Amino acid sequence: MQDLIKKVNELPLIVKLLLCIPMVEIFYGVCRIINQATKSPIDALYLVLAILTVIPGAFFMWIVDLVCVLMYGHAFLLG
Image (cartoon, rainbow, N blue to C red; front, side, top):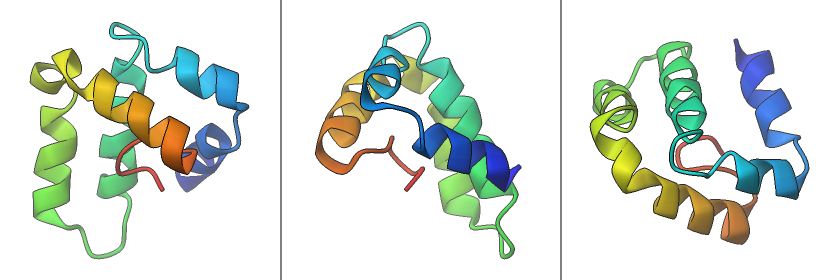
């Protein structure tokens, strides 16, 4: 599963920006859950935050992801 996160981080910038569109942004939410669930010591706080960014957070997380992609090159919690 970490290969998926690496592939998402290696995408071109324009594709990452397109993934920040509000309804498509759920993909980043699922990637955040996968990233936190596959880490060796699971950090419960980050896992809960990742779960909350899928449905209730999808309304505001696209702005956070857009800023993070433009500034850092990856979405929030996927670096």
